[in-house]
Image 1 (cartoon, one colour):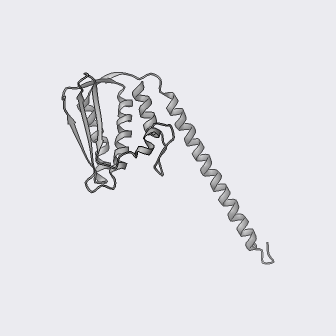
Image 2: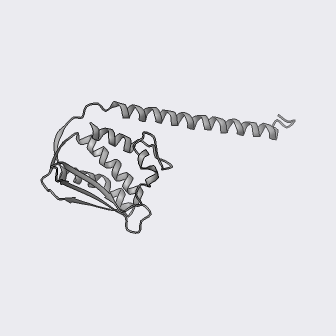
Image 3: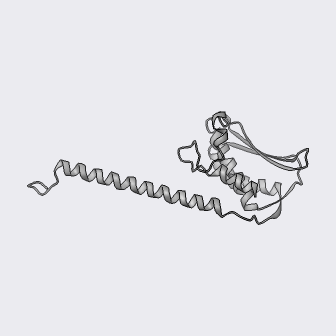
Length: 174
C-alpha cells in the first residue's frame, strides 16, 4: 500500500494473478464435476424398460421436439417410413436419447452446408431386422478418427462432452 492508501502496481498484478488462478481452479472444478456426473450417467443404465412403440409416433415426437431448433438453423429434417406399420420393442426414453444424439451430431455436421438436410428412415432389412437410419448431407467423420468416436469423452467439438456416441452405443447394446 502506498502513502495514499492505494495498492502498488506490483500488488495489482499479484491480485490479478490470484484472480486468474482462482478462475482456473473454478473452471477445472466445474470440468471435474461435469466429468463425474457424465461418468455416473454412463454407468447407471442397466436394464431398459421395454414397451412397444410405432416408429411413426417416435419420428413424429422427435420432429416435434427438434424441428423448431433445426428450422431456426436452416436445417431441413424429413422422415421416410418404408414400412409404415413398423413397431419396435424398446425403452422409448433411451431410444429417443440415442436418436437425439445422432440428430444433434448430424446438425453439427451439416451446419456449413448450403442446403443442410437430415433424414430419418425406418425399414425392415433383408435379415428381418428393424433399422432406423439418421442420414445427413454433412462432412462425415474423417477416417483418421472413426475408430475413436465411441471412446468415452473423445470429442472433436469445442463444447462437446464426448459422451453422446459412447452413451448411444451402450444403450443400443442393452
